[in-house]
Length: 80
Image (tube, rainbow, N blue to C red):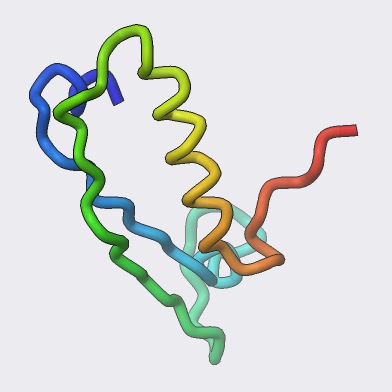
């Protein structure tokens, strides 16, 4: 986020759904199965107006955007 703000380069959100289903239960071995992995590229986000004062709000908006595009079983757990 800081790099995007400083360079004014657009951020392109990449959403990956299903990847958590292929990780092996013992380490970093990927197990092949029938569950697909879906990768979605969202529209670029203009960062030209981002400032240090607005960066926190922009980060929160991007976080919410990611969550809104995740499958239900991939979304973060709700805080108690």
